[in-house]
Image (cartoon, rainbow, N blue to C red; front, side, top):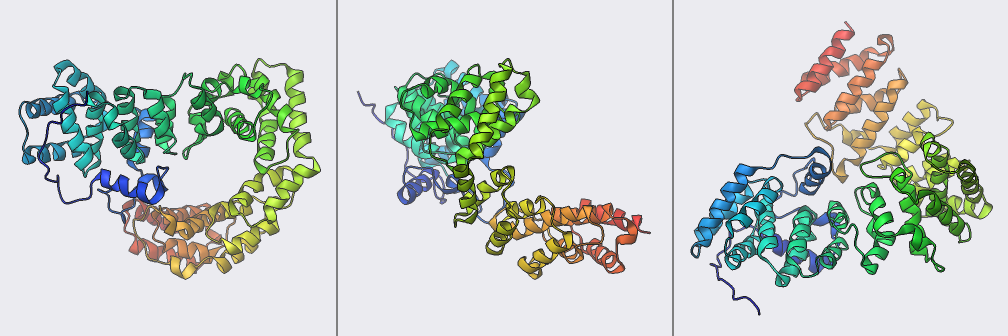
Length: 522
């Protein structure tokens, strides 16, 4: 039977756009998701403000790495406020006050203790749901909406699925949507699966982690082909995908499609990579047989750039002390490594890498640089050509600096002076952290100036620009570079620039560093 709604006043919480209207607008523009930039900027954010860390990233880091202390007192106060409100129909003023109160509370720290407290108090579910709907449907502040989703998880039902999915597609709210869907929906894994496909950052990580151990064939197949991929790092989900998805048994099927084969390659490469934030190949009992089966299959398929990369990275891993320390047959391990290298070096596979270096696709070019070096394919001229077209690409500049043999530093400096808009980077000092796409040239400048520490006397024009750049870290980098040079290699004109930079510097720490640099030359 459909519940009777406990009607609340319809006045808006305030004049700002609601999170729900923001989500619906994104859905109308871009479909069900994932949405560009995870739905940022949010309605309560200044789009021009540069944030070091979004709410989604902050919650992800705290739940997976640093931990956080539950706010028991804040949860109890919130439960008390809710208990007063459900006693009788609240006014618009009451609801606005609740919204503003919750907006100032860190939802992550109160979510679990609030859930326990509300269950203990046994508040009327229908009335709690109406307050939850008010917060989620009309809320204009992130924490107020997130707490509304916590309440909806306790009081909602299948009617609220689409609301939770819409809000959860905003990466900032995905964690709260996942938990609410698990608690309120008649088929929780299917609801979470739907959300997992709509997000690709921390939201996907939170969602997929709640699918661990599922026996649903569709979800298992998706985990192996796509579900482990996310915009943070595949390391969080690769082991879960391999185990819950049944990677090795899937590779033993008579027909292994390309999506499964390439997903398997990426999962195995990730598991065999450097130690990361989650379980790896050492925690995967089927690691060696899965690797053997993957190589057996991939060597019979057409070469692709991604497959070349996987084979070369697996070969690199199989030659490490970690691989040697595993309880694997040494002869099998050694033979597998040789097979990976032999396949990657075959003419057709080398040609695939070379083609990516000359094609028009920039992401493919970037991906081809590492395997090209491993296969002895020269990349220097290709890099210079790409930098002419993309001079703000820091990865390409770093690859140029890492070229072997290393290019002459005078050549690199001249090339940078030719390509970078140096006059535009003399912005005057500011306390700019350097995030955002419009700071790409500034970041390239910092990369190059950092490299100059090993080349005393070179790159004066770049150092001079860095000392007058808006990025605090670029000015600090310039100071560290000059401090690494022998004093006699610093010309008088550069010392004068440092004195001028010290005089104008707004950041106390940087100002102190510049003062110490000047004193070291006295």
